[in-house]
Image (tube, rainbow, N blue to C red; front, side):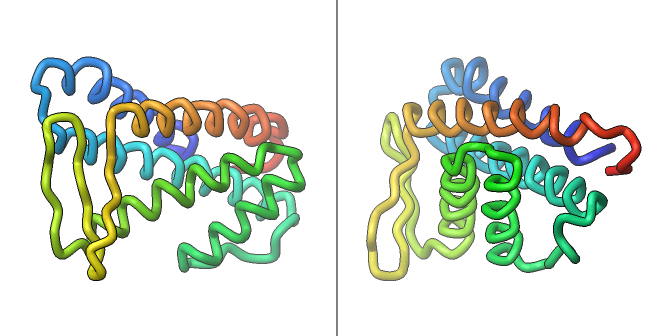
Length: 156
């Protein structure tokens, strides 16, 4: 499955979790699951765009570490004249997921999921923030799709 198709599928899963599952179950842990799906969708879209740029020889090589990939994404967004907000969205999603992996304390409130870092700085994941991230991720994938599919000679 190509990266862009995977991104669209994960976006659909996130949309279903937020629109159907969360209202029925009303468990704030689902908000974190939505954030994970959005993270995976955004990174798959980023991989598709970077693979396209590598095939078009705009970038010399794809790096494995996340910080390097995010830097390449920022450059690629500028080349394709896409919004820098997309970089902020992908970075924000990555920050939430990496904080969840390292968080010593996390708990739920009725309408939010709260993550604490080692210094007990709080990060909250709310329905409104996840809806905004969903919208921004959808816009990102909608912007990347025509770029990746515009040149059929470049395999992605």
